[in-house]
Image (cartoon, rainbow, N blue to C red; front, side, top):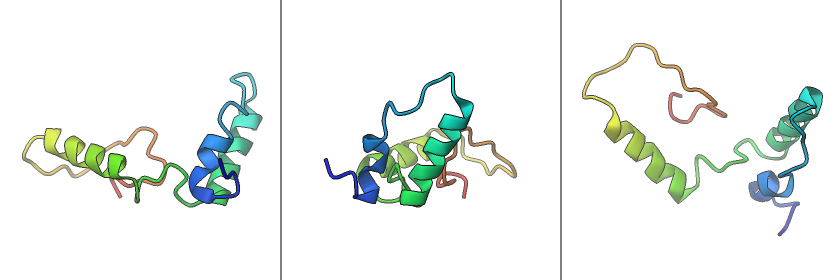
Amino acid sequence: MDCDDPTMAHRCHRGAVTASSPAGRAAHFDALYCASPDPWRYLSSEYERKKYAATLAALPDRRFRNALEIGCSIGVLTG
């Protein structure tokens, strides 16, 4: 695996942070987003596009003024 490829950064860093280290977690995610503006490929992944479409299809046929997207990363769904 090419860890210099920004699209693979999230896989190269897997397991590098422990649950007992909040500062380590923050640094880990800072590094991921510095390496790539979309480290999980939400904008380019076919899987993510299909998941996005399925999520929208599951919503009722009405508009929402506000929404809370937990764990939104770069905000693709609600952006």
